[in-house]
Length: 429
Ligand SMILES: *Cc1c(COP(=O)(O)O)cnc(C)c1O
Image (cartoon, rainbow, N blue to C red; front, side):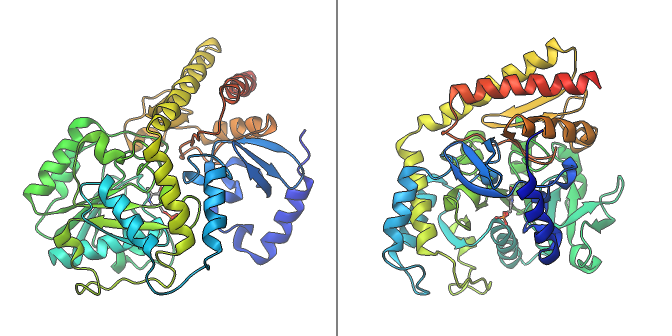
């Protein structure tokens, strides 16, 4: 057994003074029935814990680190930027440069506002959509995550679209009564839910927060058609997919122009950043230009802008990055599938470009109900076996694994071998 004593004692200490010992729930490793690793340092494709163990990292900070940890170009950009100060509270040129890069890459974004997290981006986009349309309700999809703002922490009651329950205490029913929850990949659920008071539909254009579930092409096309017909703002939450699936994100891959787009993760290069953008008339509602209020002390922070710009610049200059990531994902998928077959198992893998999940279910995974058939206890065993073999995958079944360019062919091969061992162990039990 791997020695993780220092992580364990640090966790015990942390639990006394931080709720659950962590600053974001999934980090507690609770759903995989163990305790977290505490990180000492990270470099390239690897992360090192305080006990000196080294792991191949498939979390990549949940997406931002598309070039892996501590990329040389990004690190030196950061060092250069910090020479000029940390934050100003008045405008700086890098904010304009960042806005230019985002608006160049996403035709739907004629204007963009920087914020500090994906949560802020979606929350603000919804406020703007409501301000612009003068309508109250929003539609979201079961299984999609858009950060932790009140009106988005909703799940639908069993089988009904009308009686919602908050997924969190502290969110009054009144706050979510204007949030309608629909079924991902099911256009009829939208048709049934639409009325004259819907301001916006918000969607992860490729779902990554229920494990990876891609939309059918027809679903996306119809969604765009209906929202346009009914003057409903279509918001793509590209916090994961933006600049990851391709430089123009899911919008480009599906060739669909939403009305607004939300960003986060990659655009900050590893620092806390989000952004939301849209057509000029919509973004013209945002203060001080218009009457929708939204502000931020550290928004457009020069350090975050500098390494965010560097990240986007590197992606723009090396379009092969996307092929490279997808090739890695294809290899891993193929290897995993062969392992599953060799062991006479029947688990499902969803992959869309470089986004990928292994689901512990025999059912094809196209809808949220399918996701729910996954055996999370098996996932926990799988996770722990991978960890023992020095591979860090997301500590929850319903997350995507994230590839980065620092991962080598050898790393992928090793992962396929470890996957075989883990599945074999599960199979034997
Ligand atoms: C991570 C995520 C968010 C929230 O971003 P934070 O920076 O964690 O607030 C929103 N939407 C999607 C699709 C995400 O994956």
